[in-house]
Length: 114
Image (cartoon, rainbow, N blue to C red; front, top):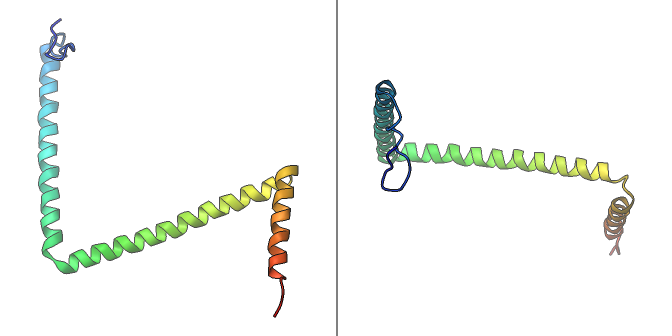
């Protein structure tokens, strides 16, 4: 079996003519896909930057989506955190620590009134 310059086995050595034909077909398909995606990406870029309204619209939508995603993600994270804390209140050490923390917060709220 032949090896290429890097010392690896050449996959074309032990393949049949039919397999080589399939590999060549797949390589051509991949090349066409790469060319198509590159052309469409360049077309999108030129269209995107040729219209200021389009840039503003896309960036506004992206900003709103990020804001909504951040809000929803934070809400889910905090809900899970509070759920885990509420489940851990029954544990002796953690429960005492959280109870002391809540007492400290309550004392701060009822602090000196002016």
